[in-house]
Amino acid sequence: MKLKNFIICFFLILGFTFFTLYPGQVKYDIIIKNGKVFDGSIRPSFRADVAIKNGIIVEVSKSIEGKASRIINAKGLYVMPGFIDMHTHVDRGMYFPENRACLNYLLQGVTTVIVGQCGSSAWPIFEKAEDQMERWSEEGIGPNAALLIGHGTVRQIVMGMEDREPTEEELEKMKLIVKEAMEQGAYGLSTGLIYLPGRYAKTEEIIELAKIVAPYGGIYHSHIRNEREKLLEAINEAIRIGEEANIPVHISHFKVMGKSNWGLIRKACDLIEEARSKGLKVTADQYPYRFSSNNPYRSLIPKEVWLGESEGLTQKDIEEVLDYLRDNQLIELYSKITPYFPLSPRHIQFLNDLPRKRLVSLVARTIFDINHGPENTRERMLFLKRLNDPIEGKKIREEVKKYIEEWVGAENFIIAICVEKKFEGKSLKEIAKILGKSIEDTAIELELMGAKAIPFQMCEEDIEYIMRKDWVATGSDGVAPFYGIGLPHIRSYSTFLHKIKKYGIERKTVSLSHIIRSQTSLPAEIMNWKDRGWIKKGYKADIAVIDLKNIKIKTSVSNPHQYCKGVKYLLVNGVLTIDKDEWTGKLPGEVIRLKKTATD
Ligand SMILES: [Zn+2]
Image (cartoon, rainbow, N blue to C red; front, side, top):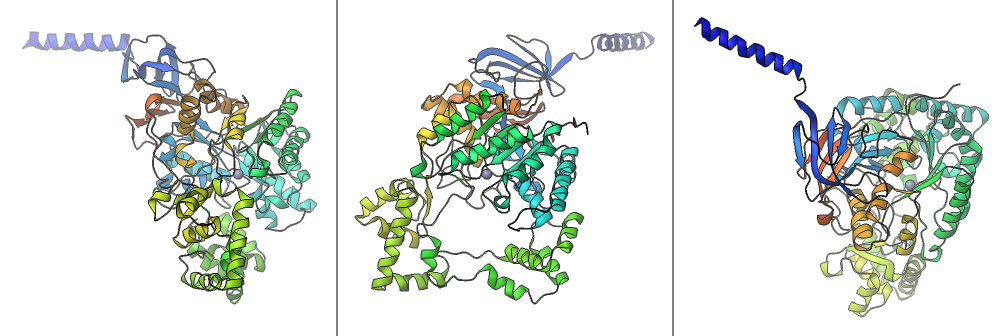
């Protein structure tokens, strides 16, 4: 017995000594072996293993030996930095816990999103930047996120929806809110100068607010004032803001819309390149599609032609009824219809401070959600009555024809959803030919069937021209939708892999490494991140392992809620979020905060 005990003790001590002397026999958390690596630069892929420990890439070399908790065999696959989406609106959806993972983005290989775009703040209505950052950090998010402060939200808090310049005092208030957000770790300011209330702001107002952001090392992101015939003026305005506020300028979803403006993008690029040659930091992002908007589905008949003289129920009608209620009743009603519930103290404060007229209009706007169109039986009946009248009917047909021709042309009006499946994906022009009818009669017939069309407002030549620029990153402009609900733009499901597949592999517009750079190291450089966007020793382990040869884009305009296939593994801060094509249920994303550098 004694001897046996001795032997047991001996081996226990031996084992203990062995593990003490050789701590971390498991040297790495993960090794990705046998893959081909795109490191984030424009150099072609090369064979290498990648080792990860504690969320950091600790080694990249031809062959890595040593034990790891997990070895991923990436033979036949490509290893690259996780994608950084320069422009998304996922923060709206991410307000709701079920969307926190942003699975539609993880499955595209996206590991970081920049939110608070187009002048609309990241934190849904009147919550402090800090509160949102705290909540996301505590509860977890799929990809990492950096936040911008939206000029439109700030202006709305201070001045409501008023179409005028701010007073001195109001401007000071706006500056304070921006400063507060920067102190809390926001990355910069965004504007949406085509939206309300952004549209009401003069250039000088934006310059003043951008000047608050600049000393922090923040950036100015802009949905510029015009993306059509006045594109060049809008680009010049953005450049002027950068010059005068001494801040890097980033142009969001760079494009030009409307058939008659196609090609203007070249001159816009010249303006940007001229500014860059003078040393100004001007960059842009784009999404690789010919159609815009997170709600790209349109009627084939313009609303005013459909409704005719009768406007139907308007927001004003509802305001008139609501005006009979007292303030506290209005707030009570509002709290029952807003999705941002329970209301934050800041939100309640905001409602209490609102002038009566604005409170009524806010509640009315939140309630007002009438479905116009062929499913509205009252409107349908009235429309058909007018259509069958010889004089009215002729007028309607002329107006429908004009609307289609002047906008994009029947050849660029694509039927996305239709009860007649054979028409899906075809242009209005093609369908008119099949039916042997005029464009306008075809449009009316399809509209009455409940068909949904998408106007292709951009052209392929412009998309490819922009894509070749080495200062253009990728930004999806998409959302985090409730899976299966509504009709989002397919960019929410496919931007990053679609760009690789269509423009890198099929059309060869640019090299694969050029595209991968545009969605990894370039956005990291624009955001001034020194620890993301590369497969390099010392960088954060945000890594996508993709089967580039077998990418499957399943989303389509007829069936948008379809995840991409191709991302085999995805690491966010060293944690596997996609493992063999499937979500692991993990939420390891971090809120990336701008470290304070302001001196004053
Ligand atoms: Zn925008």
